[in-house]
Length: 217
Image (tube, rainbow, N blue to C red; front, top):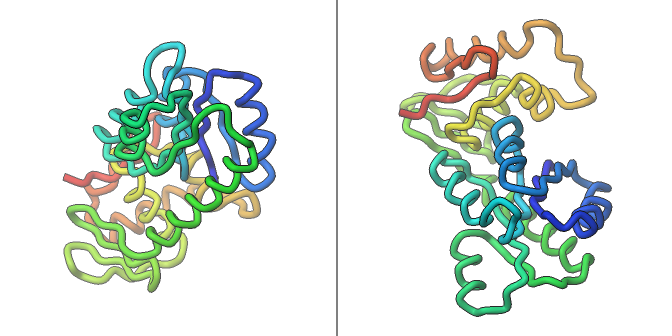
């Protein structure tokens, strides 16, 4: 899975990356500006977020995720032991760790959190037009079942998970076709064209020079 780590302490960031990179892809950001860039250009399965950053509060990033309807689980890192702060973390995210913490505890919490998320997601994904059953791999458009192959299903699933976020071709290739597949010339365009044909030509929009986004209006 791909994890975005937002932590301005370089030593701690390197330690976390070293511990988690054996099983996951880790992108490290040291401030909000860099975090926004990563979120705008890539798709993630988990956000590990420091609350106090050089250019603002980690809470601002949470607001950005909500505004753009990006469902991304969050593990907060906080130096505060204040009960109100802990409650705030749990309301905005899924878990938290108080600094200083044991790196093995973080590893276990990440593993448990990703396991819970996988279990919860293995049900249904919905927006105004689409519904996906991730257990049976059935997809519906306006209540009518769509006949999708594996790549088409995975692509639609990725769009639904990312809300209003524009996904680049690089992100689609990494997430759907992965390293062991060869993505030929117009493979991505052909798969998207098939999804449009099986649903509605206007529901997956092309953002010229950037990528694609699902239109959930």
